Length: 111
Image 1 (tube, rainbow, N blue to C red):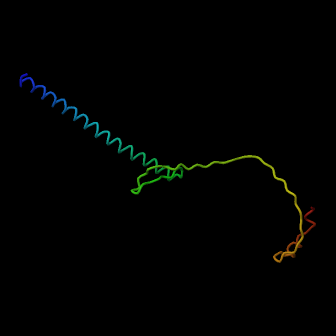
Image 2 (image 1 turned 135 degrees about the horizontal axis):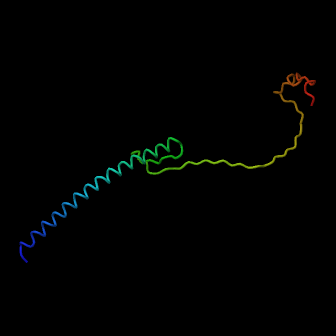
């Protein structure tokens, strides 16, 4: 094996590594920018939901959201019936003003 055969292989390997590194670097930078933008939009959505009262954010010590508590409410409708038996028990109460009850004009109240 000759030194002249190894040099082109080394140069080709270096060029391949350099081109690959440049493309990986560009892709990594673009991915980092996209992740930053998605994180910003996600936080915006979460804070909007929290301000609307739909969720409650669980935050760490630095204030970053680490979870959510989803709030919910509901209504229940139904039918039922109630019966009662009325009974009048006369007694005198010290707070009862009898004169107000006697002021009612019975001629206007046929019952």
